[in-house]
Image 1 (cartoon, rainbow, N blue to C red):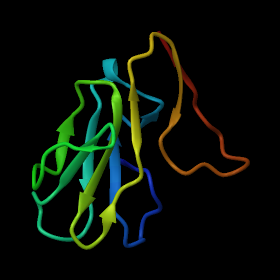
Image 2 (image 1 turned 180 degrees about the vertical axis):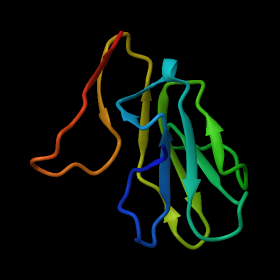
Image 3 (image 1 turned 45 degrees about the vertical axis):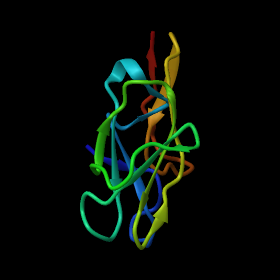
Length: 109
């Protein structure tokens, strides 16, 4: 399912990750969805710190390793999400984890 990278219920722009694993890697076919207030389709995307289109779709399929952010009118800029092209990664669920939680780890290569 979708996983917010910032706490739910707050008035901030959130970057949702599918599949819901971090570290995010290209060969997982990563989709990022920008969620916030304002008009749907009014998302501004940033790639590598540079504006990467304006008032575009709320969802993108990532095809290059880089750092991504999005911006929505009214709730501002999201936290950054790095998508890697590494050949071996240890992944954890992309959700808030608390001490004592049982966590599934995924090692992929």
